[in-house]
Length: 63
Image (cartoon, rainbow, N blue to C red):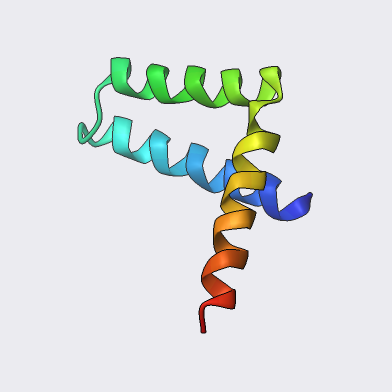
C-alpha cells in the first residue's frame, strides 16, 4: 500500500515539474490524471494488476 502511495506521489511531483518547465502540456497532464482516476475508481486496476502478475509469472517460469 505504501509503495503505491509513494509511486503516486512521485508521479505527481514528476508531472508538476514537467508542466512547470514546459515539457508537458496541460491537456496531456489532465488526460493522464483522468485516466489514472478512471482506473482507480472503476476497479479496472485489479484486472490490469492480475494480467501483469500473470505475465511476470509466465516469464519467470520460462527460465
